[in-house]
Length: 274
Image (cartoon, rainbow, N blue to C red; front, side, top):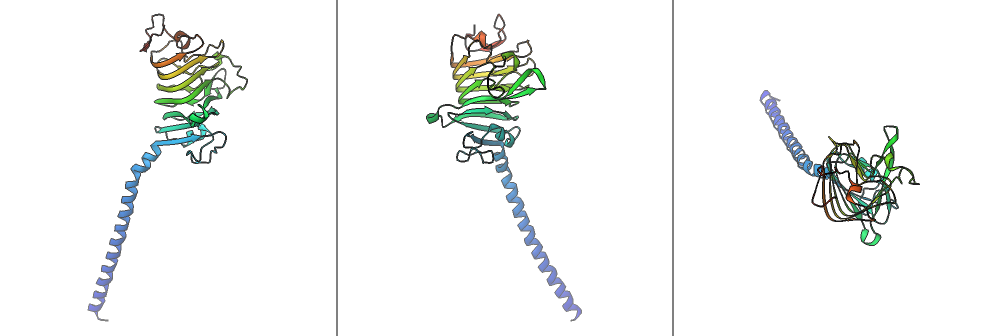
């Protein structure tokens, strides 16, 4: 083969290779574009999750849909992304021992309550820093910046810690919502039973609580000293309390339920609290 023919063959081979490389680059660009386009959808999927919880037929290996529910809120917490938004639907008519620890916005709701009635939520028990005199009940721990409850019963007891329910109200910091950050708590169509343990607690300076309640009933079992809000530090930080159609049962009053200065100056509310 003459030199001219060799050069021509080399040029042709180079052209074919260039064409193949260009084709591969186009395929790579397409794959990159597809992957890039899918990122926002993936982020949206991770930032908002809904889990159904059925402690009778659920399984923590399920996907959490209504047709394939989880068995525990603890499993939902493991799957939640910090800073995300999580919806927890508890099966109606059941008693659920709740342990959910995740720093994210949380919505708690009843599921199938029209036929089964509201689910009854009880906090799980845990020692607090190995302290034998003070404990927390791990219901919803370190959630934030808000938590909403709808269509549920909140039983603030120590059933998850001691099935006999014999612990003193002073043994626990709080039951259903605990944390050392500011939290807004919203409630609608909720029944609260304060049985030995307070619903939530605050510590002046860094664990502010805002409570908003609509169509909510509150009762306190027997001679229990449990409160809606327990002041942990004795300094009683300012509380913002908004109420609409809230019923206090068995003769309890707002001073029984929240710490109030004599002049009421530490509570901002749309109702008369004394």
